Length: 557
Image 1 (tube, rainbow, N blue to C red):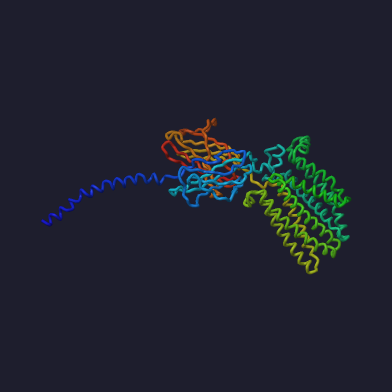
Image 2: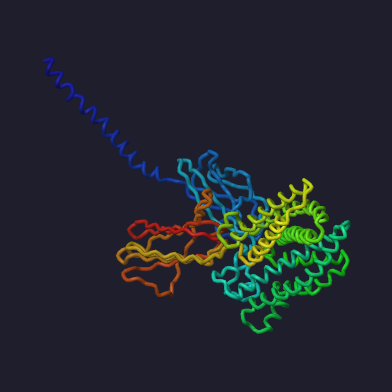
């Protein structure tokens, strides 16, 4: 009997287990059903102030982003605003608003520019959300590019090579040669004039200086005439002489050439003029040359031109003093030794000023030092820097001999003059190179069995761009359900992707593919707000909810 009861006892408990198992199983199924929905939930940007593509007349007091759900309370939520140089406009921290659903960042007074708002947040359920968009304050001018530094563009003759031709033609060789000779005459003459400030100069030094000023004035006149004529011929591009007159009288470049010609005509008279007149001539000559260079294309112009002026003055002081030292050394060695002691001190100051102004000017011209590797201008600038280091070594060796009471070796002086000639040669070429690389329109095309696409961005430069996107899908798939274009700076990992607001348009180009249907989109706006390396990502969702992703990388300067 007991055995029978033992075997019957489990059977009696089964209805009770079944009674509890049913609701437990239902609850488990409900949790499983809800789990994917909870895992895929994330915060969505609902409102931004200023909004994407807003063009404001005045600086906004703050930037605000608001999401559809509460954000995580940790300090990992970030909101940044970058200018067109990709620099943060404020170091302030964003504050939480709207019961933790949004962030607000107070802004300083913003100048006219394109600004990138980048957000990186974590929603309350732990999901990261990031993105970026662009708004504009006022009507910012375009950033300096290679075209703005081309004299042909400045006088209205576009489409000509300038400073970047791979083949050295006879005309370009003569132009480079005349520029080198012109620079040698300008730096030498201005430098000799600056050494006129040495009132206590020995008779040997004074006589050598005055004779050199007389010769340098005539040399500068001839060099300027040749250089101006060849430059006008290059700018006119075969047009009649009347075009020379238009350039000289109606363009900034031409007016600077005309001013240089007038100064050159007065150069042979400098030997007979007083110190004040000489210094005035030298100051105007350096100012005209500084204004006629790359510096005038960059903002702030006064700062850039002042740096170039100081750079030229320092180079002139060193060049004129070195020429004068060599002339005195050839005639009267003991006096050359005494002058060398004075010259070495001023040469050191000149080189300190040259390096300081050179580095500061480079940062004015280039967004970063990495740009030195992108152009011939950067290569020649590095060569110039290497030559100046050799000059410093040579000057140090000469200074050592002078401190020991010995005259400098003639070989050292000749080496120093040779390095001066090499630097003038490099500068003559350097000033005809473009410091900024040329931006080219992006044309990305890719074929595939599941999708063809074409992406065009014009001019593909920082600021406003026209975007065209074409997508071809197989006929059996049909038209795309959704097409998204995202642009993201690769160099800035802290900046989210910028989603370009694409609009469908009617395309008139004949570029159909058999058994494929085409969808076309366009957009216009500052969706590439700053220079750097970018990735364009195209995400296409077809009618069957399959997502096709293609991407390409490119660099804008």
